[in-house]
Image 1: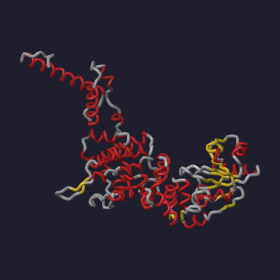
Image 2: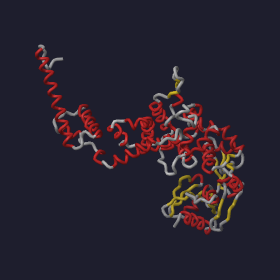
Image 3: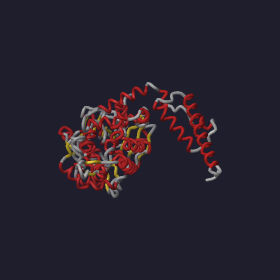
Image 4: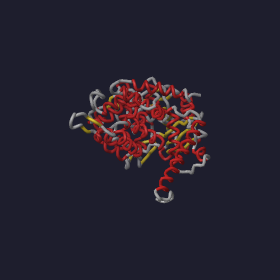
Length: 460
């Protein structure tokens, strides 16, 4: 059974038991826009205990607020009792919840386009907030007084921008004025909630528009002040005819592929984040430079991602890509071994896509991108290069003592392997024996010299 059919059946069972029940929120909005909803939320007059009595498998995620998850066909459906809320002391949680009727429940919701109710059994739409007219007009408007809605839950400020970008709607003037007025309250919202909302905002195809709306609404400075600073950071017209770092990032976000790696939007936002703090003009030529911005940017990116509570793996990958992104410009001039090390980095695919968008969002030249893609294909045809020829254990078996010298030898062997100078484990072992023999002979010769000078080889 499809998610839609199951959601309809849940409503049918609630109604058959004598309760009012509707689909509500985003699923109704998306359906009216001709899109298939991803999730189905249900509002009902049934109390939590009555919902639990009707469905075998429920999860009490917010039972005190009348919210349960009903699990059917392996999917979860939020089922919430009609309610009114009040006394939002912390800008998120209501201090008072009373169960009520559908029309009152509609008034507590955030935006008119999210306040529509639909009966999938009778196929009837219920609109007590003017949401259908705003949906047709492409307007995002709060239900009731905007200042009150944003005071109830400060995250709604960010949700206003996200919905406007995602739906390609205009934020109604009084709603936008309230967003700007309350913008600094976002600093009181938990980092995890802000992060999750930003992740939704910076998705294709609306990511570029989202960044622009974030700045125009006054919300960029409270959540990403380092990115806000890029708006006033000019760049060399020779390499960046598009203008500021901010405009460059916005153009890149506009080009974001539909199925982009989740790290990619953040790489776009953060790859040049240090340019404002590293900008300097050459006193002689007047040229603008950003020396070391990739290294400073990697440090800044790590701090930003940690502040937003990103997972460690994502943080490490993004930071590594920011640190390396300026290496690509020298790829065609690299030694074979150096180039192959670049191609074999775990983050190479992500780095390459960043470079492609970086180029398209500035000068538009893709020669380096095509060169690297071609070299990557060639390297893939030589799987033997992906594994080192020797391991530390094999070196220890030759009689070496554990220590830094083993690591240095392994690095030398790997470099020669990638350079094409060593191709088999046997060749590598022979090279090691020669290297060790030369080292021992050199040490012995040095000892003889010290002896002829009247010095014991063990002194010093």
